[in-house]
Length: 203
Image (tube, rainbow, N blue to C red; front, side, top):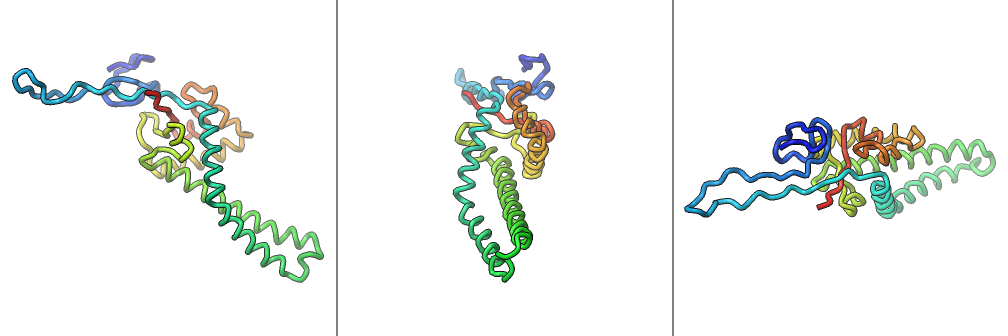
């Protein structure tokens, strides 16, 4: 079949045109079937699901759902770690007498809990996006999936690279995320770096 956007020849069953990335929305034909008399051995061709690129607001709602779910699950763990480290430092004799001592002991605690938070988020997003779900709880709830540029499931290594690239999207004052609202294939900056798409099945 041929791409409706650029006219390139696209193999049957491929969700996206390899030339321009356009969702094919085509028909996946069944293999040629032997017949018995006038009755075919196989059923008629089945229409492939039609997909669209997921824009900024859909992805924003999905990530809010994810952060709420993560906060509920991990808050007791973070609170326990922060509490144990904080109590340990607070028991030092000079802790409450010198502000510089207080700051010097609490900053490592804050950095440690922030590191735990980063690792939890990285593993959660990467494991979910490389799983059979192809997305996190938030994306799954909204019918979204993360794919490569040909519409295929990504590997764990690919998912890790995509989520590490979010650091660059954040360093642009989050403009890298907003790019999903106006780029041709609704890609955020980290999607462009990793060569991924976020799609939504519409039928």
